[in-house]
Image 1: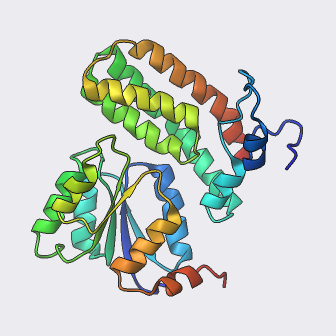
Image 2: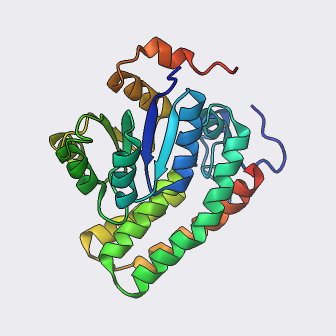
Length: 136
Length: 137
């Protein structure tokens, strides 16, 4: 389980956000959702999440810009960022890592892969992540 | 796994067993229900909510694409088609996702030649997808 850990989920795709929120909550994470770049940055400053899952292509300013700002601010630069991308650009992975992203995952998202990545960046054991789906 | 009459969902076994020429009217690559359920941890209620949300959001996405095509706005087309592609990909809908990708690439490349036809193809695929998603609600 991941009691007390907060994940900021930033994605303009409401269907994906609904799905990922539910899966992350089932793992014991608290989830904050943001649907555009401004909301993402504001939520990151306010909620001080333990990790951010960021869609790199959002309206209202690109996710790339958000990533840059998150990593430039002393208040948020320490927060690990997992970037999700459905980009057709084969160099998107390199670009986001240069900006400080910890993990790059291509869309459509493999939820188990995302959960594993979250466990890694949050310093949890993979066993804890895999065992935390038991109901009750 | 045998498919029930009226079952529009593709299954892994159906896909592998169906190596003959595909029937053009069969929407079998639209959605794989087993794969969808696996993707949401077997939570049928969540899948239903996702389907309902997609059906609510879909007209807005298509309207954005239509507006971009009509106004020959390549950048908006790329953005709007990308958004729809991301959303429809939650349901592993190959054809609809491919149709959206075609429009996205037209927008990215700034060449909107054939975008009307591509949009028509996308709308057709979405029409095939809708009743399948309705069944998930």
